[in-house]
Image 1 (cartoon, helix red, strand yellow):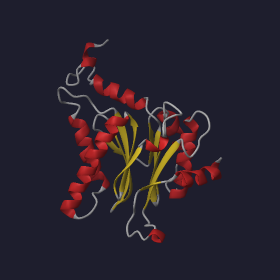
Image 2 (cartoon, one colour):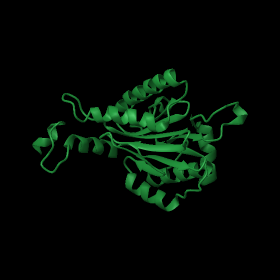
Image 3 (spheres, one colour):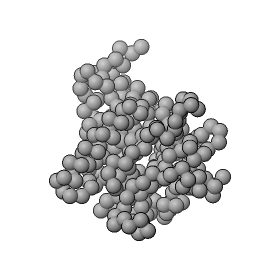
Length: 242
């Protein structure tokens, strides 16, 4: 065992912080999550991994709404995700109290990346064992960001994290185009997850969240709202694919 792998604050001779490498390994063992930025919105989707058929799947939170205009999904360790969800919601509320509007996606991403980076250079703590995908709409239009355990963050057109990341990214590179609309993006996200799911894909085995640049007039919304699709809505999408 490399003696540098036990220390978070000590660089190894080759310039790496090995605890961050281990955190990325935890992400790589997590469920696959996918994000796609369409021309008129963003979709994030993830596989629901459960250890037993006796678990009530509806009680598991793989995806979270941070504020009206931003949603977040993860790959990695669920408890770490819950901590970051709470931090993100507090940051969003603080911004709203000051400016009377939801934060731009990039501002919230920087806040979360800063928190995660602090846990890479402090003694007595460990890095967060999650990577995040944040989807939202602001004055710049649709946004999709990835945040890693090191505190690094990147804007993406389409990306994947988790266990089947490499194959999923290869699939997205073949299927993605910049003119893709939200409906097509949802279908592509499902097909990407389907590539890595063992067995039958069902409405209970995946979770999907969307936000459109066009408010849903039929529900009386005055601005874009992030929402998680119901199992019935997911089933409808699956029936058009399978």
